[in-house]
Image 1 (cartoon, one colour):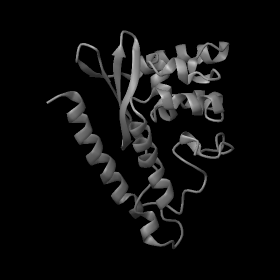
Image 2: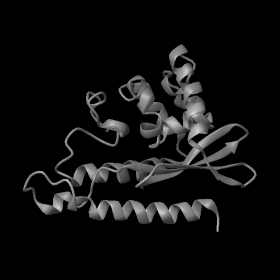
Image 3: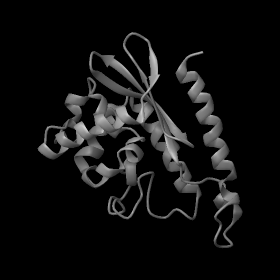
Length: 198
């Protein structure tokens, strides 16, 4: 059984379990219990696939209790990225954002990214980017170029749509979440649709 299958099973189980029991804790007001059944996801399980040498696409992602990024390499090997690897990649990508060379923030960058992107870009374009790259958030999440370009980082439009729906669903069902999507925070609340820019 591959890493992806194992982690998908664990992530689904822990993610759904967290959603089902979340309403039992932290209820500060006598709101309808049905609005408390689903909580804002704590993390994201992301599968990033290498589609060409040094080029990556987001193959799948969904809410999870913890954040994990699985890399599926060209040779078929699968591995989970370590925190150290992610931090290094994101620091390199932050430097590109600062000097204007990141495809994520370029006007019409989706044309370049449609054939694949760097691994750091793929992480930031994914739902996990809000968590592992939270310190870059103010540079990205209100950026319209980023919102437009990141869609090209998904392996297919249906993957993006499925991910968008899965991460926006908790927000829609929980009356206690009022400020936006997965990336909703004080810093990013000015962006109307949170992470998915809806």
